Length: 473
Image 1 (cartoon, rainbow, N blue to C red):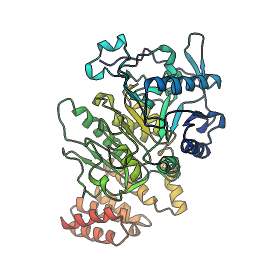
Image 2: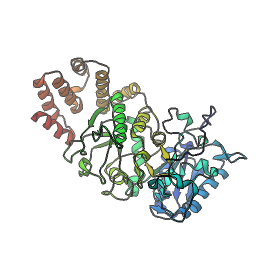
Image 3: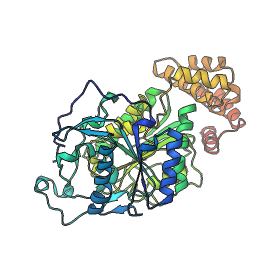
Image 4: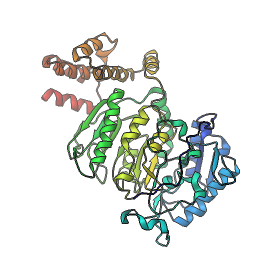
């Protein structure tokens, strides 16, 4: 049994308008760490966060923080700052009635995990299943319920997220009980600092590449839910037009799997980073988003080899999520909701928020919460890339092909469409697709000719491996 947050969601019609993306952010850094402050200042410059919305608190320089220190050094000082600065306004009944921010961004060296406090006793926790009877939590997840501070919510076990699966971003506001919390973090300060830079690059040019979803092929049992979520995510990517690989086999992707030009990845359930992600170079595209479902995927963010979040960030991912401790499957992000929301122009922070079934629990969100990779209309972005003679336009053309196929057009029709494009002969991406279309259309000779041609057009290293594999079949 998972508890409710004690809030009836108020779908308020008059959500306070915010002047701009940066104005909707409060930046929190650890004033005991010059590095933390530097990252906060860099983010503020890139996202135009007002100076009076940057807060430094003296915190332990550790990924762990005790419950007492969390309360006295982080939660209560943060709340007082929000009230004093009139970023949060509570009424006489201590209900939040106005908020000038929607996002809280934590900077490198702000602790990651609230440690279990064995001396904390709450009557409410006695009704929970034993595996949920814990008060340790991710700092991010605990802070997300800061708008309900005066509700005196229990600390033991998870709380249902009142915004889970919300489909109108106007309701994702602290006045409805939830603050969007994410962090700029990772194995090194440089990696954390660059997260906003990579996000802005992808917002300018689009997030392009291929999508990979690693299911386990489960058809029944309690763990089928994880596969269902991943399948929903894969279907969302296909509907958007991504070249999508959906693996249904129990093992995770093998190390030699040619996972080239990755834009999106989600899979489960290895304990430590594995498969293609252990290569010296992983082909993450600018702005790539990756997630691996495992109970301890974010047990530390400082390692480039342990768990998942740290290694993925070290290999070039722009945004990810993970768990600092055992959440149970139902307490992890619903990745189907996450990718569906993201592809419908939600910001990364908004998508992560509505994807979490529970809060005050184990999920941490790493990346620029304002990151909005699909904010531009595809047609406008296509015209922009064409006008700039940007090579990324090849991915936009590929998207059109996949969308047409999804609408029922035949491979033969898409072969003809590609032959009319101005530059397919110079694109390894489109020439490989042309070979795939010929193969599907029952023209293996022309397929092989296209794949051989693609090999001469400077394919990426892993794309080259895949092309050679296609030629050997």
